[in-house]
Image (tube, rainbow over all chains, first blue to last red; front, side, top):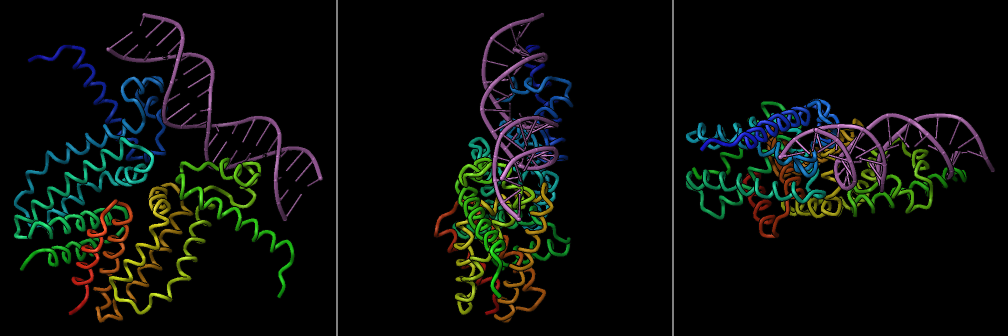
Length: 181
Length: 181
DNA sequence: ACCTGAACACCGTTCAAGT
DNA sequence: ACCTGAACACCGTTCAAGT
């Protein structure tokens, strides 16, 4: 039951490492954050990071998964909300990680690890949206198409600056157009 | 009327430079294409490029403008088409520059030049879409919102791999939902 | 198991110098 | 006006060595 000391230490170290990396990635951007900078912040040599993660991209994936599970933990709380509010919630949840969202898209071409993470992430999100739509009475094929559209809209809103009114109008229109009356 | 020799030479050089850069950016990606690589392909020293462009980002902007005006030249040909076909055309037009689209988004945070270009580009595209929608009888405020949505859908389709059927379904649904019947 | 110093092969960019 | 050689201050990553 009780974990041995070594394993606990590793977890603690990774936790420290990933939260520092997350903070810097979000503040300075992925490209703006060098491995050396992260290491300096932690008080270790730059190459020490490579004992924990095989590459900067793998470190990013670890950070993404942290962010993800933090968000997922809050998911049950929105189960009862209408579609529009669910999308607004998702938007607000990802807004804090905006920098990471664009980074993932930017590195898709260059990193297989990121590509795998991204694909799996989209599958997960789309499955959740499809489930919601079907629960609201949308036919399966149509629900799949609309889930993709909903995802594109959320990504678009994340990537481009916009007013509260614009966001509201877009989500409202989507919910009305998507759901059977 | 006749341009002096120097000016002609500059244009020719820039043309050569930008088409080489464009080819490499599209093939190897922006990050995957070093200034040295472009220079080597042209048979000049790496720092020679900095006589023509103050930075790699400015070279990218020059390439983007080239690509843009090539696309714009084909614009009059689609004037009469229905909304859905116009979007499909835009999608196909940008598909060749997919790599550049994601690069622009990736570098927004880091480069003011790219940010300016991107903003101006979106203004232009949205104005064109709004014009089309209003011509089809959509009210101005609604047309503006739908132009944003349309842009997000095109960007989403560009960024994510998808089947022909998916694309068709999404564009069809958007056209039907957006236009008054 | 964990960490380091030193190095490698790059990168975008600058600068002084050549023609 | 146009181009170069040499350098600068980085970068992610590797490796052999230490404890």
